[in-house]
Length: 285
Ligand code: AMP
Ligand code: MN
Ligand code: MN
Ligand code: MN
Image (cartoon, rainbow, N blue to C red; front, side, top):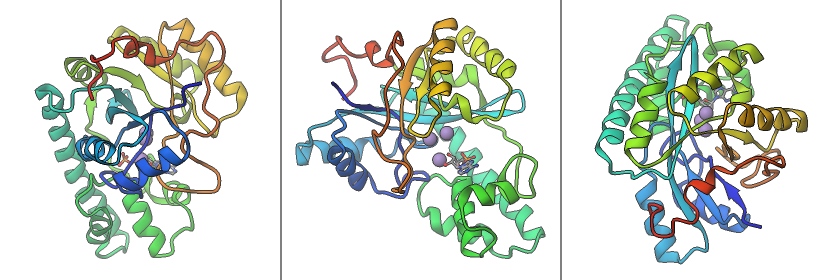
């Protein structure tokens, strides 16, 4: 059985393992087909390809990126898989998104400063180094200041929707992301549909509009998920004519989440990998 994990992060965004560390871990966990999907950047992809080649790692890399989009009042993440990372339209979109990330990070800093967190922007920025700055970096900075013990805890208090440090999103819309992904030869996948805290009615509306906008697939399997949720997402994928993906959304090693762990599709689900398998030589290396 081929082992797929099609969603992961490195230190180029909010992951805590370097490209090399992440790839070695993926090999250790016997993953055959692996996608790196950092937030709004493809900076990890070329170093990853070079490392796989120089170390002759027994793993096939799917170049990817997780694009933040705005849909209604939600921030919907769209994972792009198997993209040409040098394609112009995609690169232009990612530069705009990166600009927005940089501006939003400053605004988050201003809001938190007003609430007594002096120098918090500088602290989060230092944690991010050259990476795309995310709310996860702010979460780590706030944990260092003792406001909460865990990342979800900080989101609940300061960074989640409508909290003190929340800045309403200005991300691109879904259609723009899907078009750029297609221009770059990739497939567009709705990330973690179970994590948007929306009712099933809204989720269905999202899937319908995503499909109408040309979207290709949705994530159905994630490691930490009730079997009933996986089953339900599998049913929705068939109802809306979307292919199915699976990914750990790995950010750092923990005792409860691991690369490749507990990832399988319910039966009768069509894997998104069928779009690149069987076209040997066509997949972007
Ligand atoms: P951003 O893309 O800057 O909005 O940051 C989003 C990132 O923060 C996600 O990719 C997660 O890594 C992390 N994140 C968001 N919400 C939560 C949460 N409730 N608990 C833990 N991590 C979260
Ligand atoms: Mn993240
Ligand atoms: Mn995400
Ligand atoms: Mn992710």
